[in-house]
Each structure stands twice: as structure tokens, then as C-alpha cells.
Image (tube, rainbow, N blue to C red; front, side, top):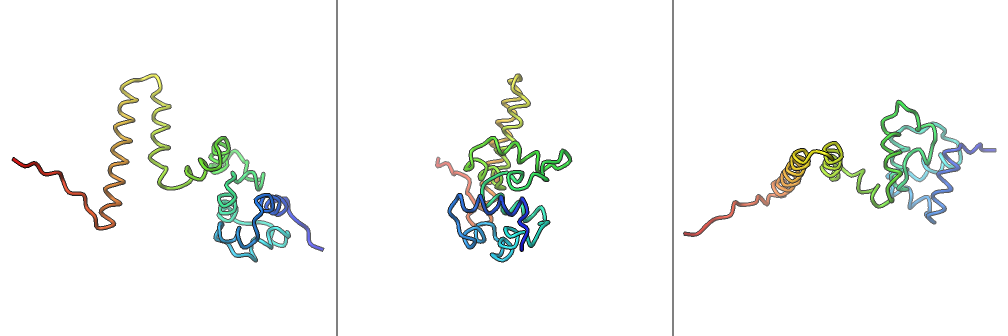
Length: 153
């Protein structure tokens, strides 16, 4: 008889709430069906942090919703997940993408400078510069360098 772990039970429960098959979760989490199935059944007990993170991201929940052992004070990911859990799932999905980094840094700078007008202006300037530079880098990597506007005399 198989012993289902807390993680496996929670994983199965969340998957079924979304009405997903093992195949759907497998595709979203980029993990094999057999890996997910063995976690749900409890035949695989201690998944790596990377596996738990993939599952949590696919289900759009903080990792501590899947496994409470990731609530430790020493775990930076758990702290970030606790903060993320305050946001709607679509916002969480955006915030964990690499493209969100300038926005997150901008929000932190605004928070730090909330009573300092110069600090707010500096944060806005740095944010706009970061967005511009990211856009330029994307254009260059696509071979579509932006040309400087020309003036006609």
C-alpha cells in the first residue's frame, strides 16, 4: 500500500481543483508524468527545490502552499513566496518572470523613496532607462537596431 506524502496529497488536490490531468500539469511544469505521479502517490518523497518551484509556478501558487517545509526563515524563496502570495495569480505569474525585474526594482525604489521627491524622480529615471535599454537589447538581438531620428534641413 502506498503512503501519500503531504506534498503529494496537496499536489493532487490542487491539480484536480484546476481539473487538470497529469499530462496537463506535466506540460505546464515541464516535468514527466511519471515524476508527478510518483510524487502524488508518495513513492517519491523528497523532491528538489527546483521541482517544487516548477510545480508551484505551474499551479500559480507560492511553494509553501504545496509544502510547508519551505516556510523556514532561512529560505529566501519562502520569504519571496510569502510576499507573492499577497497578489492575484496572474500578477504572481508576471512577477516571477525575468521581464518583471525592472518593475520590481522600480517598486522597491519608490517604496524606499516614498518621502523623498528627488529619490522618486531618480527611481523613475532609472526605471525608464532600464526599460529603454532592455528594449534596445531586444531589438539588437533580433537584428533590428533602432536608428537615430534624422532631421532634414
